[in-house]
Image (cartoon, rainbow, N blue to C red; front, side):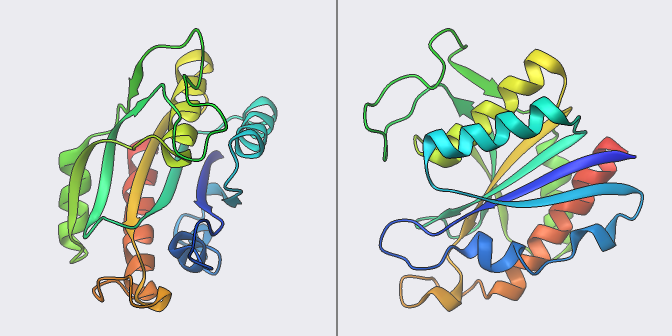
Length: 197
């Protein structure tokens, strides 16, 4: 059976909750694809710890795909990230490359027009973003795409940025209750499972 890894993040900064954890932890994605092995993981918001977790998983198992979800305090729609760049800055003790000998960027091989169509079918507002920033969201995306390029596992990787959930308080736009984020996650997961079937 093919294996898919789906990740969110723990809280960080001034917010005591992370919308990806709120939505992903109770979401039974495995029920949506019984012919797949689905692993759901909440990553720590720490460069070294998150990289160690991913390295450990990728060294022990083969994944058909990895789907990362991350919280964005500025996004108004969900965002399909095209590129991961070889740079860490936000929250890094010392800004610099994520991989000294790595390429400047990796691009996902996944097809964004079909993802946008899947979002539209689910009544979800989606858009394409150039890259995933310079914080841990970008870092985990880069490491997954780097593993994919080097070993073929994961076979595909994608990062999707998610707006703040209504349940997180006045900082949120008010358009994204956790249930809507879960609809987006489930729709993206089903789309990805179809891509790697």
